[in-house]
View 1 (cartoon, rainbow, N blue to C red):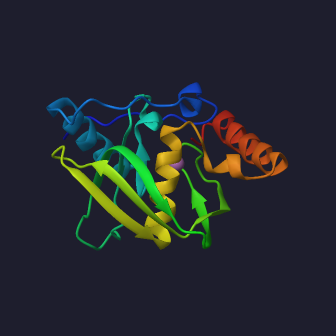
View 2: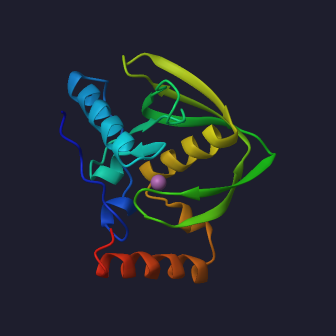
View 3: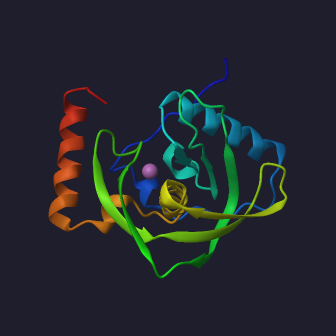
Length: 172
Ligand code: NI
């Protein structure tokens, strides 16, 4: 049984920080990716960015496979959006750092992302639908942006208050 990271919640300052690029995908980074994946599966969630486990480097993991499906992990270091469609997409999003809250977020429908993969090789991913929302959401984390930052301040504050309340009740 591998050790898991603790996932931090709003309003932790690391969630507002811009993460630093890595030089290369070393064994330490691969170990971080493995532990992030294990932490994400345990949560459970479909995406996790390094900021959410209080590590400020540009690493994220995702897996959109259903619980009955074979695992399909995607690990990215230094991800960069190199294309986004003009067409937009609206989907409900949640976040492991904003527990039990969700809201509709509008984003470019299709994006192309370049990154370094688990083996340190340059790779590209074209994403649409849920995967597109997920990869944009996770890259946002690396830039200190949360999905609630796209909402009105009224809605955002309501969500933050609800999380605060859950914390006080020791429910998260
Ligand atoms: Ni999130």
